[in-house]
Length: 356
Ligand SMILES: Cc1cc2nc3c(=O)[nH]c(=O)nc-3n(C[C@H](O)[C@H](O)[C@H](O)COP(=O)(O)O)c2cc1C
Image 1 (cartoon, rainbow, N blue to C red):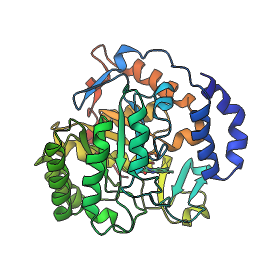
Image 2: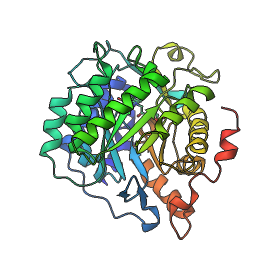
Image 3: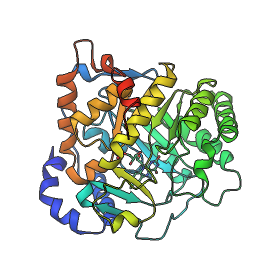
């Protein structure tokens, strides 16, 4: 795999330039460098979830391909699915630069992009041109200046839903003031009712998922799961980045930057939240586990904590795309004959009661 082989050589260069420039470079490379399709996946990695067949359970998380420039190249790297976006209804520039910081000694990133997006019209045009293959989801976010945030999600779902296997209602980005308030019970009920009505009206088969923050207390989580279970949503993604700053962070200077923290320090809190969600959902819909996965063992722990599928982003910044192969090999070796799905949730109780 040329892209994966080139990464170790480019690593010092990528690490030395501004984090946003490095990211743009990676997206450009995928856009313009041919990525040959990788070998077919081990059949034990196959997962059925949301009525879809995933060749393997490892996805690229939202935020890498915000404007849907390279979904097919990401799939060719060997991901089982890709979530593009977050996409907003109107184009918006996001926050001022610099807005993403690598905490190298912590294997972590803080970002406050603020949902920079080319807007749904551009993303729709891009996705409409591609040949439909593989599993592509679209992460939806409200505009910062929107007077009707729920209206934004509805318009996004109607416009982009026909072009994706799933859409994610992202109500957990910490960088759009007030967005996380949509996780409150009354807002969430209205959001889900209006979004799911719009899906039914448009006769869309697109799955609708809800992505939550790792910074919720048990009562807030109870409310969210209660509302989600009483409506026909298809699943949840746990979790987004955290606004917390664990005391153990080594880079004390960059730790002071505002924004969402991702990567290794997010692994435990997001896995505890995942397990708590799984115990509440009781198998009524599947969960996607995301947050701090940096090895095959981490991915396996997410599955055992309750994830049917996993996603990652930050560890790829530090380790490059070869990490994906390591994760898939570990999962295939751990999978029983009936497949990796047999392991979902088997350590959820332990995780849910462990400290973050
Ligand atoms: C630079 C960056 C941009 C992100 N943008 C989005 C986004 O637009 N929408 C979203 O729901 N999550 C976004 N995320 C969160 C990731 O999808 C993921 O939930 C989080 O980073 C935890 O996974 P990780 O530790 O493997 O990175 C972003 C994360 C990073 C690092």
